[in-house]
Length: 252
Ligand code: NDP
Ligand code: 8X3
View 1: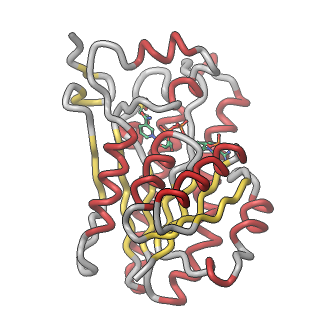
View 2: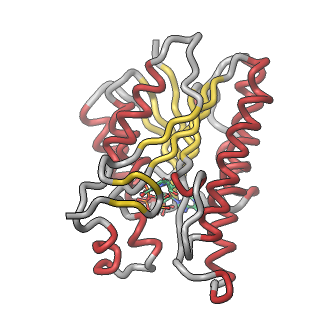
């Protein structure tokens, strides 16, 4: 039977790879992000290639009003969201606390923490009503460890971890599964965004070792969703083989 998955941050990186993967696995997809042309291109590609229906929604997760307008009034055939993947997020800047850029801090807190909360607040009541559903939150190794100059990004991912634990505790009576997937270094547009478009600096992050790929995270999501109904993979840390901790890499 077809199920519906909502993926935030589907215009690039993990979200886009997860969309491609779930399109082959009996899911119809609600794809969200701010870049409309990318959402449309992905919808066209996925619908041309397979038996999948795609609804694209272009909004900023930082605005509760926009989240509610887009997700609180879904067309009837899209109302039953079986799987929510809270993936939209970003790091902006890498600076010690005494030199931090307050706008960067606000972007990270508003997107990674408040955005995840807004989307969950609008989608989870339907899951509670139906007594079924699965929420997958994309955390990070930065949600388990703090590294120098990562201060606020690490704090937001620690918050994602706390909120994932809270969701698990509060949604267990309704048969809703929750999963936190916490990746280490993965090569996506993440570092390009962190370094505000400086591609050369972004490339240096992934030099000398083999990072995770977006496909690795899509595979993990697929595995999590394929577990039998009585199994909840609650907390997954997935690292490149060459990365043992946030700042410990084996580089050639
Ligand atoms: P990308 O930059 O490739 O993708 C980020 C996605 O988030 C984009 O689709 C972007 O869409 C969306 N997004 C960002 N801000 C907003 C917003 N305000 N409203 C709506 N959508 C938004 O990075 P990744 O795929 O790597 O990142 C995905 C998640 O994984 C993030 O939460 C990140 O923190 C986390 N992560 C990444 C790791 C890595 O090393 N790459 C490791 C661990 C965790 P658009 O710009 O179109 O809005
Ligand atoms: C992204 C991985 O180590 O840059 O969450 O914080 S890291």
